[in-house]
Length: 305
Length: 334
Figure 1 (tube, each protein chain N blue to C red):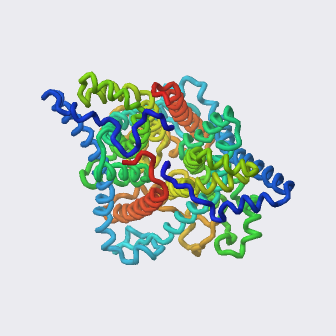
Figure 2: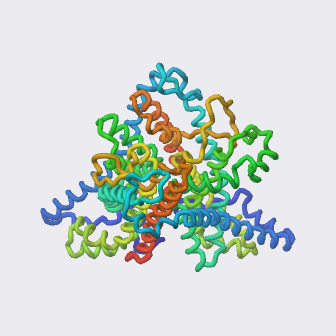
Figure 3: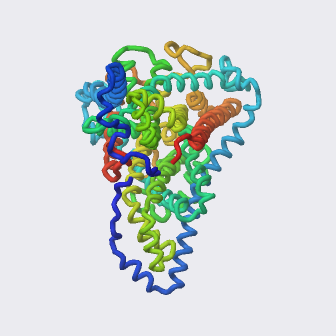
């Protein structure tokens, strides 16, 4: 961003000059109008947030107070019947997210360390570019790629692990970006002090640089998790829904909150619809707590700007 | 952002002085292994992206070769036929239309919000407000879909909804706004929801750029007696333009690839309907077409057709993101 150059506005400084000649009253009026418009923009942006949260809260809060919601699955529950819980979907969502994190965090940390501590030249530029490409890759494309690899090439079944592989592609760029940013904030003096003590470079990175940037890295991981937990497209392609609890990521169908919602959203029967909104609220709570906590961690961060 | 001690961008942060490089044998081995490990994970990222393109192309090619109609210009979608007939014209239209209209709605609002947060709001308020805008990005897309289809839809996009009626009456003579009988599940609603979804990302990047306008530029305008709006117009907006364009492109990329929200919202017109260009018509985007038919991936030929659609989506988003990068060189790029 720093490279954006200051361009003279098309009309040049003359536009200030000429506008200064306009009557003071009309200039004041324009100024007030602009303030009003800008304020309206903010209100306009806040309406959907409030509206969505209100919708999900008012329609979904009912079931969340029931302990069964957190401990039971939907096994044997038809759309006609009230009851059952979201345990199977919550466990599935958390399990897939955990597997995703275990795979993607080491790769992302390595990449970020390379870019900040070692990277230069063509290869580093290529890596930066590819991370940018990954940032913009639609989740359905990531899912199709894993489908082409996992199902049509290797001939495996559609299982939770394949979903995690697709999510890895989506999580890596988030963690690389935030880690990179944090590592760049670590003062050079710290590294030099460590070198001066004769500490080798890799130990300096592991024992000095990474701990200093730790909170920022945790933030990146939490934001990445929040992103992948809310993803639906990879689940549609690679992770068929089931009403039962399944803890095996390599075998059988596994439920997740987004597919739980997607499964019953077209139901006309109220018990099923209530569960859809409750699942939506559960998902929104998990994702928002993660991303809010992530930001809070970064605020308490140890790298002083 | 710029701590005085931070290394200048463009240089590796931790280059030790040359004299240290001649350390003991063990530490050099450790250094070499560690550097190789980080380079390995970087290479893995590059390989993953390359593989994505390669695999999609590999799986799509056989189906594309058998395709009996022009893949780019046909609106037919019958991948199961013998020979298969499928083209992406309709998908491309719906995808681009919904994303472009979403961008048109989102950019002005995002720029307004970003200006408010950087140049109007009191400092104490700006941070929590920015936090709230960012919360919009934390809402999972399936919830946008649910809310859009069942709550917002009846209000703004139904056949009798005032915003839709107004648009149809005033602009109905333009094919783009032609009146249709499609209730709710139309591109118009999808675009509004997409606009809300991409608003936080455009706002966040614009805000970052507006914050970096040199104080000297602003003070120069103020010294000439400019009002706050005039200051923004002559110093903030020109400085921020490349950033805003780049942010819009990133938002556009998001909107083009969004899957589940669009899938829930858009209704598929029956194959007997005459194809319409209107935003009040239904349709399918690349992503929603693939998502709607995820259970149909039974034969390599059918799967290949959908993967071909995915490949086009990949290329389009790739191009859009590349354009975004041209306008903005990422801070600290090597």
